Length: 273
Image (cartoon, rainbow, N blue to C red):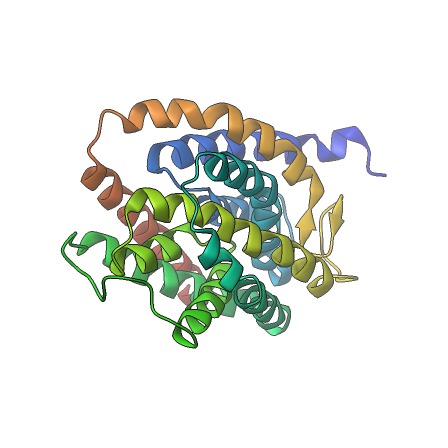
């Protein structure tokens, strides 16, 4: 067990990260994964975590934090009857399968490769948000299998490689096929459950016995970060939400897109330089 004085800087840095993540998550209405991963990456770097495992640790820890928040959110949305339960039942294999595939990829990928993957996906999502039009539609209802199954697997793969709950991806899919944004957001909470739980298991397995991990880590999950950030983000998110009410939905969408562009450019720069 490390001495308290040794882990104190780690605790302080994570608390500061949690405050920032909570504010940004509340401001942009996002579960936090796309925000937590770059914050974790930089905080772990400042604390001297080995670069070979730093990105893996950021991804796995982010997914672990999403587990309780997504379960809580899904329960609340389901009580209101807003969740497309049929879609989730159809994805109960597809999404976890994709997430486990992502953890297998992450287990074999280098930190540099994971940063590039995150940056590319983040940039694509950002461009989609910037150029998004409400009139864009691919159909009046969700497609049938096997396309629907393939989409679920794809959402699991991309989300697992980004350490996110899949909300942005599922919202895009459902609204392009005629579903309301309210139903899409509610259903995304369930998608987050299908992603985060197998993602947690996969990143624990993928990092089991790896060297260079900080104290209180099991595989690529740092439980100290999980324990500290869940209450901090839940406490600070409402303050970010208050700021969000001063902006229009389009301003928030563009704001989050610009945040993703900034993060993507940072990751690209870290690889090049």
